Image (cartoon, rainbow, N blue to C red; front, side, top):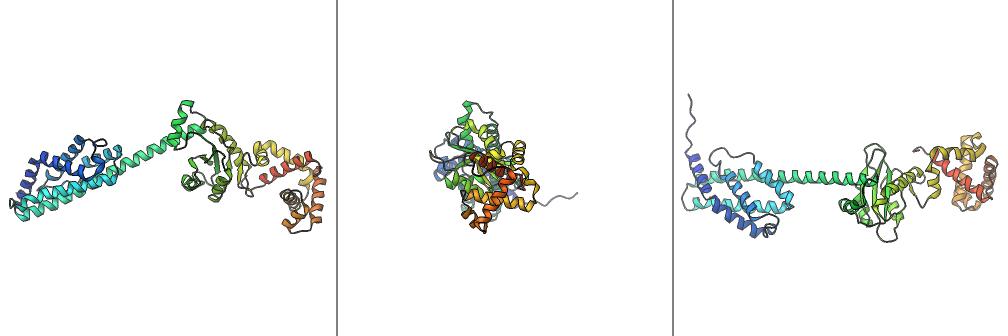
Length: 400
């Protein structure tokens, strides 16, 4: 039967570790004082009590010196748990790491003292130091891993809470007593003006904006967002008593290729569910030629999108026999009408925009009146034709 060879050096190292353990209480007290002197967050005892800090120091001393001379510890559940507890207490990781560095220096000094006084052979002290630093690396890494696991868990929990609160607001399921708490969870001011934004997602599960909150922060706009299956929806709190929706609309339009609807401003988070309905209607009113629709700034666009099936019927009835001409002629007549509207009814300015003669514009408009039976000089009939035009260009837009 084979026996392992005796390890005299290992016996000396184990004896040195045992001596350190005999002084564990004394070493823990000194370690606590050094940490509190070097790391301010531990000084008051409010965040981490002295008793808790001493308990951790004792556990680390046992973890370092207990296996010395035998098999060094390769895992440290206690250090991992300690990392989690420090994260739960809100101690910055940099402060925890500094406390561990202070502890490591102190333990090294305590271990080197017997070698300096000749109580143990230098070779034994050197091997003990090697084992100690290996163990220190292990429990420092375990602590950091535990800390990051807890921070990740807290972040996911907070995001889940924010998502649930935002969904409840969007669905109108929060009572009056919960509004201020909801604003706090969403990191929004408790009073408006707010708007709801509904942005088209180009693919299910794909965000309309990359980091929307950060995008709007330079504008002084606080916001909270939720990705739904068909849209990315956000509550945005506008700065000032007189909200500037235009700046918000411009920033959002520049950040996405899709369409966007924005509700009218509202003063209280309790109005979020109704504002979402209006933002979705505004979203339906957007098209490639006008990718952002603001509900109370674009009434024709909103009216055109309000009841799609009804509006299609209205458009067909109003545009009369226009469907009987070729697609090219139909588009030509409607584009001319749109240019004339954009030019505030000026044939000269419309012609300049279309690169044609003003008489050509007038001729096309007369043809449009003949096909529709509506006169552009009659306000009511012009309004009907304008609404039909707004409906038609959304119907023919590929995104609709």
